[in-house]
Image 1 (tube, helix red, strand yellow):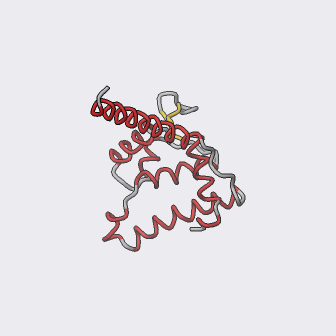
Image 2 (cartoon, rainbow, N blue to C red):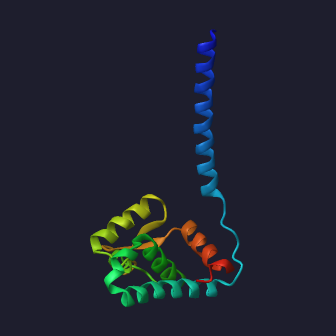
Image 3 (tube, helix red, strand yellow):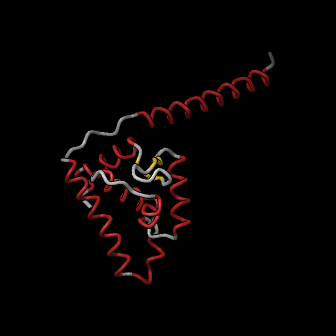
Length: 154
């Protein structure tokens, strides 16, 4: 084996190991359980409600700048977290409206969240033709961990 071909072989093996390491890290980070809540779940939900309310008040007070504050995915995740903890069903339309974005934008963000495993769609228990949306268990646990952390007293 020549020095050039040996070097190419080493480069190829290094590249393969880097890809495998990246895949391992991606899998490992997904499966790492979120930290245990430091405070009660009721306090965490109250913090989420305060944050969602503050975001709506900010848009009201700074209406001429409201288009600069859009974060549809986060707004929907907040609303779904709050509703889920109250054991309340949320329709796709209601979740889209929670984003304070046009309905089509909200639906597009819901599709993205679903493709990333953050939300799932379930049949409406009353009207089987409709679908509701809810946070995945992993997303719910991470939201709870976020709002349970004393550093995140927003």
